[in-house]
Amino acid sequence: MAAGVQRLNQQRKGRAMRIAEEDKYQTFRNNLRRFVARSVAPHAAAVDREGRPPLEAIDAARALGLPGLAFPERLGGSDGDLFAQVITTEELARACAATSLTVTSGWVLEGVVLYGSEALQQQVIPPICNGEMRGAWGLTEPQGGSNLMGARTTAKRDGDGWVLDGTKRFITNAGWADWYLIFARTGDNTFGIFMVHRDDPGIRFGKAEDKMGMRGSPTADVILEQCRIPDGRQVGDPHKGGSYITEMLHNSRLTIAAHALGIAQGALDEALKYTEDRKQFDQTISRFQAVRVMIADMALKLEAARSVLYQAVDYRLRNHPDSRRYASLAKTLCSDAAMAVSTDSVQLHGGYGYLKDYPIERMMRDAKVTQIWEGTNQIQRLLIAKETYAYR
Figure 1 (tube, helix red, strand yellow):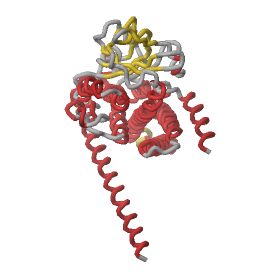
Figure 2 (tube, one colour; figure 1 turned 90 degrees about the vertical axis):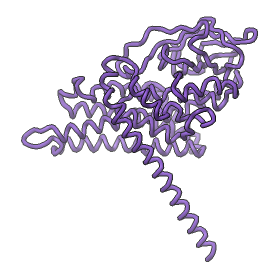
Figure 3 (cartoon, helix red, strand yellow; figure 1 turned 60 degrees about the vertical axis):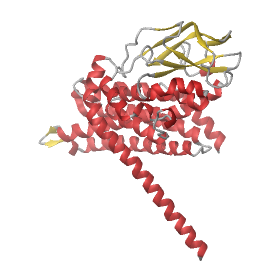
């Protein structure tokens, strides 16, 4: 009897803790929504139209501490866990995908905290946290992005430092960021991760790409020609970069999934608003059965993707053995939902959806790249199949 009462009390305590945790995240989300409505959404159209970084939102995000969310307090960050990072990415992207990408892009330097020396952490992370500097990472190369271990960029020991040679393509924040996390070959079958600063000798940047979407997020080549960096800028063991980057991609795949999910939610928001305002045949088109079926299908895709993403985050936080497969599931479902829901939202807008006067046109353009970057969805499906066979 006593043992049963004890178990019941433990269950009640566990439920109470879960409710408190959910309330904490919901409060955080509500605060973010107010921030987005005030400081992000009003500038989204101008950022896209002018093809410039979202400077207004970045300044506001600095005041809120968002650039440092993913980093420990000892380095000036906020110690936000992965779920807080996912919520932030999602809510920002709901109004402006380019702003979400730009504000959160510094988080890719988490690897410096995980594997870098204390001196390197102190040099790189605090100015990222307070927004004085910006970060980027260089993985993709001209000959391909999916075959990461086929990278041709090299890093060679030279005296008391390293010399890097190679080109990184489609780099977010290239030419605008201060610190670049570079993945480079250090041997026949070994790789390292190196921190390169924009002022280092031998680094230059290609022209800014003229893109379909994400126009408020700068993209260009990072070109390294006998780029010399001092010893100590290597992240951890310069021959274990392959395993480091695999772990780092796990987390970033989930935030990229959240980014796509935010676009999908924003697209559904726009569809609901338009169909409730637009009148035909003396009633709003939201009353039409065909419209309601489309809205239901959009909601189904969105909520299914959200459920898998949140499960994937939970698995990652608990080091669940199936977490890697769920990361690929989440990235694929969320980005496919972003493309499908934004396309259907344009359709529901009719001819107006094809005009730049309405946010949905921008959202549809922004959605497409989410199926391509961070591992194309075709590659993700191969990974899902591999992990499914392994986990049965």
